[in-house]
Image 1 (cartoon, helix red, strand yellow):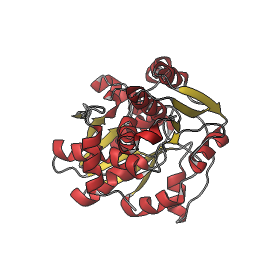
Image 2 (cartoon, one colour):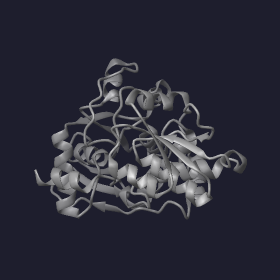
Image 3 (cartoon, helix red, strand yellow):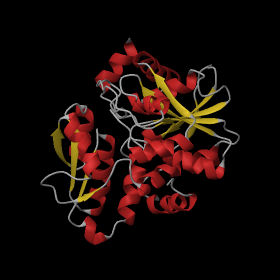
Image 4 (cartoon, one colour):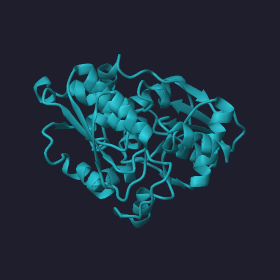
Length: 312
């Protein structure tokens, strides 16, 4: 079931004082569409993930949180959970894939999180079993959780307050929690707004699943787009995606890198690979020619890698 507007409104109250209200700005470039950027990279941890993590912790009984929290993440939810756990004075453990970028791992350590590195398949199975052997803690799912999606949905409330008459929103698709949280709000508040997922060509299970009419497993290739991409889509989230989303726009690595450079040159904003996919999809015109909002989901990218991609 999609999250409700009431759940999202409650989440906005729950996360006040933890997450910030991020700006919505125009992309300073002549493109096929009128593109706007929702700058979630300006959150305290550099990612939208703080919204969902803060909402879950606000709604979890203190006695459950006391033994600590656990999450699985390529880096951004790991930072969000670690940040919120430190505020509450409880331990945080994060399971990361062994391909996770060092810049995100270093951020988790700065926030006091304990890191367990695992091969990709073992890391992904942590999402499915909602736990990790030997770790007794409350598991916070990075995307398949109603309270996480409600926290993410607060982004849509802010967009609608800041920009009238928008036509479409393009959202990076990782596990689906961000896209579906935003789309659920649009369905209730602005049903004329079309919501698209954005995926990278090296890991686009949603596009393959939508084309097949059922969840499909695809090949996964690690790249600088580390904030999104997996081999599969959870069945329950796939069903929501079929109802709430207009489709998935798959971009190439070259398109993502070009979008990253464009935003840096024209708006002086650092975006990570996942965010660049949404921007690339929006500027391509595949989300329409009207007012299109690209969700800049985060800016957590190694600066050396960022410089390399922007210099090419």
